[in-house]
Image (tube, rainbow, N blue to C red; front, side):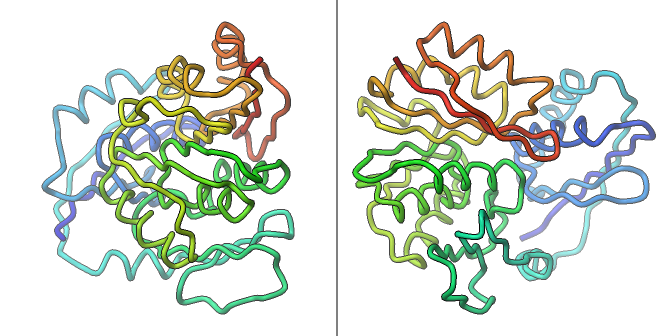
Amino acid sequence: MKYTAVNFISPDIQEWQKDLLVAELAEIGFDTFEDNEDGFAGYVPTANLDVQALETLLLAAVDGYQLAYKIVDIEEQNWNLLWERNFNPIVVDDTCYVRATFHEYKPEYPYEIVIDPKMSFGTGHHQTTSMMLSFILQNDFDGKTVLDMGCGTGILGILAAMRGAISVVAIDYDPTCVDSVKENKALNHVHNIEERLGSKEAIGNGTFDTILANINRNILLDQMDTYAQVLKDNGELYLSGFYREQDLAVLKEKCERLNLFFEESKELDGWCAAKFVKK
């Protein structure tokens, strides 16, 4: 597959601002990022590059810092191989071992998740995914029906199933992610996950005991009414993909208007994950 690199050049962008921008770029098709001397580079399949959408995004997203960009066509290469070279196993709460197919098996951990590291999001390495995995490990999923929104590789739904969920609906707008869920649930011998392509409209009329949503603040706010409608009474909602300082209060306010009440949160490097209960 041919890719295009977009070099984002900024002398004063802060790390949290870069993370938010990366999340927005992922929404318009960018799927790999790396830091460089002047800022960072984003990579997008050449066929998916929409310069107008990029310009519109930057006009809305860039606030409080300077940013320029340069588009560079690059030669075709094995992107998955390059990505795999930077994929290392992780351990969450000394309980869950997340590895790729090319890493060794470690039987000392109660839960092991094998992820084929294609370029879809959700390998456990990002702080938000790690915190969501921790929430799943620390809470009861036995016999629960689960909705995993913005499922990426399916890692959260896979652990929920391992923890006893009777069914998981995993939804993502990216076809690469949907294909990744199919592969990864097979790798982990988990067969009660139904993957769907789309966004909140793909949820349908079902109801759920638990909702997992690791996306970003704006999408969470947009979809919160739907979450409240499909979450059962006393159901649990786990959110991540946002910053504590900038976003948690806004999300709390939105949730409370929908009878979704804050219970606890986690923080890692400024990123936040939070648990709400419908009452």
